[in-house]
Image (tube, rainbow over all chains, first blue to last red; front, side):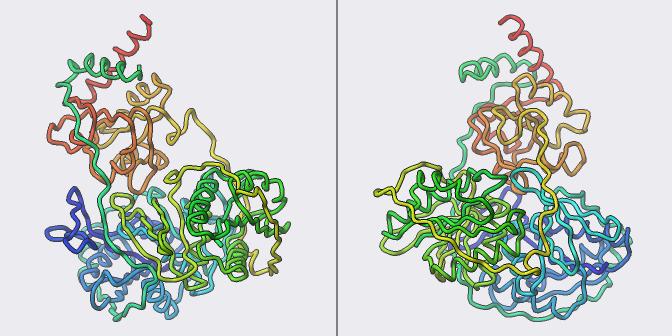
Length: 250
Length: 327
């Protein structure tokens, strides 16, 4: 099975979600970038399939040159190759349309059975790129996959819906978007990290197209007002129960 | 025309579709455009009374036996054809698994802009103001769609579902023929596995007892289960607790998990990172139990107890049992 995993690096905001003065981005000073959460699970799943069935895992990422570090992380986990579509100019000019067309273009030059995406990115949260790539390549897609089973030469995938789960039988080539929680991504081994360091990452330049969705400004939702510390340890329990009783909860 | 995609599952309309229809109606009334509902599937006429009740003026039905089971390609084709045939100004759907997929594919096929996960919409002087959730719900973005029709998916429960018939109470029904080929039906749902309910579901529970890193083990969650049971509530977990294998992924609350809005939320051994809080911020009362007095959770909870949850939670359980026994 040849699998390509498309992944994105996102800002690891931790506690410091601060909107820049232009209102269109977050302040990134002093913050690190990490692999998008859903994508991490997609990388893990691809590596597990490779380990069980053989094949290769290639990771493909669109981002500035710094995104090679995220690609190396995936290689350290066990992916074989990495390709960076290096974006030129302002990262904010890239929306789902530009991203999908650049990835689809790159995928046309690669051999694969399955293309994996994370469900959506932790930053833009558009939930469009995987589906748009499937459309551009004319491939079937299942969105929001939480389990992949290989049974008697068939690929069965499950995705979560509001009622429960849908099961699809898949014929490759196909595109899947995978959700966080379907597996527990491994930590790279020391050997993996050393290997990834030496790996050459193929880099191709990419330019954005016009985006039909324009960001006007970001804003924070109102914060919950801070509360009351009732006390320390189990001595504070009666006080808590009094509060809950007042609220009619016990 | 404002076109709202209405989702049907197992013969019933999906509740959040009626939220989308209500939002569509507001846009329709503000803009003077007619409100249309698009249904795809089989035996759809039974839903017409509901559409009328919610003020739809037109129902566009794409009916076929081949559409009885959901097929992403066939349903996308039907939606795309309806958009091409009726040239709506706005196309709306609830951001369910199916709604996200269909509008995502249609937006790509028609090369149109799509705003997903919208939380607020308004129409003023022909301009549409759109707010959507970004960063997994931590932030909101005010956006503008430059292409037409404007494609939107609405965050579930961000809009109310309120019936209000059209002024003349008329509903025109039209049928749209969509030729389906074998290729459109290659990928179909083979099986629908309905969730087996073990007690009350996390999203519906009035009391949620959630645990994080501080719980320390799978075993540690036993006491949280006991506390939840006393309230007839459900157990939730942070991403760390799920990643450590202490709880199943379905119980993950936060940015990449579920959102809950119970009356009472216990955050046990949870630091209170924004990524988690986005999943519980709509709880009426949040109670935090944490060893670290500096944990951000204390600034976001209504009531806090600084202490070891392994002592506080059992004491809380005993006290509630005692009260119940006396009651």
